[in-house]
Amino acid sequence: MVRMDLDSHAGLQTNTHRSPVARDSVIMAEDVTVSEETLTNGLSMLVKVGKVLLETAQQDAQASLRNFVPHKITVLFGLITAGTDFYRSHVAVREQLEDLLQLEREWDSFLESVDRDLQTSDGQLSGEKTTDSLRPGTVLTDARSGRSVTLDQYLVRGQKLLLVLIRHFGCLASRDHVAELGVSQADLDARSVQVLVVSFGSLEGAQLWLEQTGCSFEMLLDPQRKIYKSFGLGSSYAKVMKFVCLLQYSEYGAVDRDFPDIPFRLLEDIYQMGGDFLLDEAGKVVFSHPSKTPLDSPTVTGILQAVDAAGCSSHSA
Image (cartoon, rainbow, N blue to C red):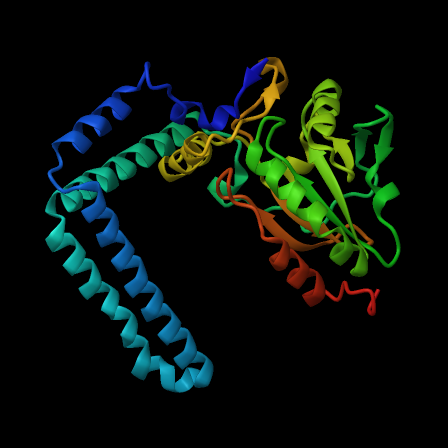
């Protein structure tokens, strides 16, 4: 068994086997003369000032948006002054931050060139036109029974269907998103919305995923990725291994959060992208959220708002 979401394997290093980047980070940290307490206090002050500026702007905008723009919106420029004070007090931090930002640009640019040169299949990258409806007769596989089913069996009059296309069985972010939807089951039921989880993986992998997650939603398999392709969702090295994304994943290790135990052979394609798509009873797409990164999923609140905007409440169904 491999205990990891392979999206983040580059960020999970042990203390005894640090990567060169990790070792360099330690060396830089040792060279900085500013104490940890001083740096922490400086960052804390910067965040506090930023929050005050934002809260002031929000209150002014709520009172009168026309007066806020253009007269009071300039209050947000106060962040420049706060940032200047911070950088003056922590010159070494500023220099290292500039190096980090430069590394991020070079990192992401390299991966974008890999996608471009290999002509990866992610249609979202090339701006391909995606479908505005799915064929009701699309053949899929029920992940629990292994039987062949068609999409129209889930398109019910007066109801909407939320397709949650997960990335792969080891993706922790996909699991978190489905779990959040499960917590909001009552709100979804009240709006006559059925959640349908979709994966391109194998039946064995799906059943292990269902066992590990305890997911109560229906789950279908799309091994040929027909639905994925319809929405322009393909594989992308640049999106999955984006610099800021890998650093965000490394936070899981920092808080000792375990990654799923998934056999490597069941992961299949860890570079596949996912997304959420809401269909009406005829299979027409009324809400679309293709993920920009592995960690990019719509909030439950955003989904519910989209449902309401599309006239999907229980009163209009």
